Length: 243
Ligand code: SF4
Image 1 (spheres, rainbow, N blue to C red):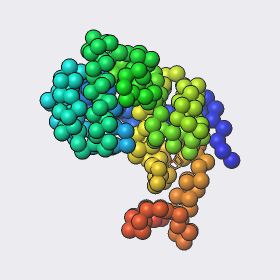
Image 2 (tube, rainbow, N blue to C red):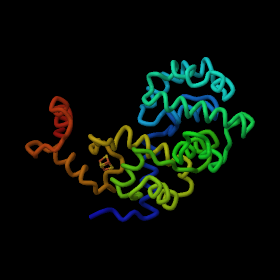
Image 3 (cartoon, rainbow, N blue to C red):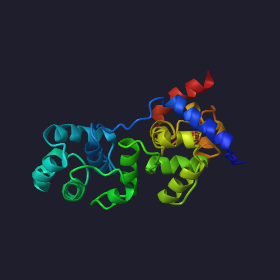
Image 4 (cartoon, rainbow, N blue to C red):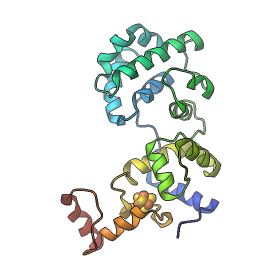
């Protein structure tokens, strides 16, 4: 039967994630709100590691709206060519940099409405900047958070905006600032899309996802395998389960 998430259970759920991820911080390298904004704009459908490789070179050469605006799209592209959709992203980053200069004195505004008016900045990017750079209790929903919120039943919703609304309703107030990174890291490293690691999941007792039943059944010798991973990775997990 699905878990009925009471306020007490939600508190324990968040405590378990915090124990698992004691330093819930962004893995995008940045030293200013502007660097963070650029990194998040480049991060769509990219790993943070891939973005960091590009921004390390870029920020060494240009890390202010003025410097990036001066580079222009063609000057920016060589730094971010390894990032997917680099041309569109370069156009957005340069246009946003110009808007910051013209409308915000070259500073990143700590304001949601102002952020989402910048070219290429959507709801998620704006909320990440507000959360990470300005310490606000926003809960931006990315693909990991959308998945784990629905899979666990912690904050179900049909679209990212609905999950964000539900999370803001149900996450205990004192967890709101860290909730984004805790849920993101949980989805990135444990409750993964294709191969959730249910065997070491700190909130497994609250989870009624079919994936959990499949993974745990797969850990029992002789049970039919539902694992989408290559066969070569299975002996290690089975050996561990037999201990
Ligand atoms: S038990 Fe498995 S499916 Fe459920 S939350 Fe944990 S890792 Fe995800």
